[in-house]
Image (cartoon, rainbow, N blue to C red; front, side, top):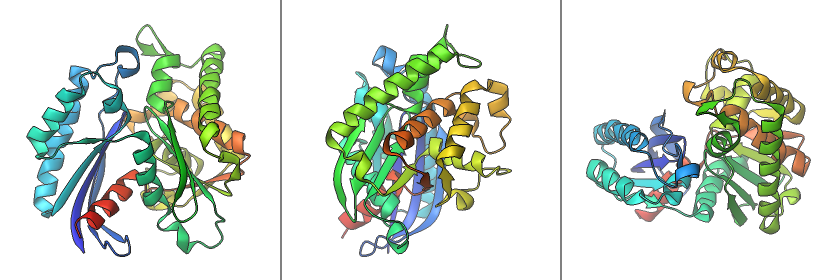
Length: 317
């Protein structure tokens, strides 16, 4: 076993996994897994730059993670950055800050690379479930982008499109600097049209409708599962490999889109950092399910972070 640390820095959150990894089998034994909402992508869709306050929130989380990595004695560390830092003009400021704190350069990966990591992390365990027919469609709904990957045991084809919960919220649900409370029908229609256009783009290269099992990743999907199960608090074990029907996703999405900030914040399994962006993320999921005719989504807590850790262990050999 190789002790590795993996960091996934996205548009909305930064996450850490410290694990003992078997490079031969891909088995991971978690030692520490945590997530911090930093909203690195705050305003990037509008300004093209990372905001100073967003950078400082991210660097604060990096300092916390550095102490945890040192405490566990990880042999290898890999830091992967995704949509927001890909899009930003001043991403060099981000790179320098991370290097100063953690001693490694963040890899600003492409959408296709992001999809590869997500597929590996999400499907390595699914092989044990013979009742889940292949091919899989893995969808990773992030803050700034969504990755679509179709494959069986390995990735066959992947595509990343710029539609995510933060980007859609900022583009369509914000008026005068604040999120509408609740959203208007015009806002919802405009957001839905944007999502459908992104699905058209994804479908040019990814055969979405060929998939027999839809696997959903990341906070928007896991939070929808938590709501569907009426969990008294966020429970990773209950969420991992849960299934949510299309009808239930539609009901939850409709409620989220027409609820107030206070109503969403009162959901016991809702992370405070997701209150304003969860409705957009749920709508992305619903639109995908309707596009491919999926009766349910299989929810995975294992995703790009696990894929990064597995790949880091393999590279260490």
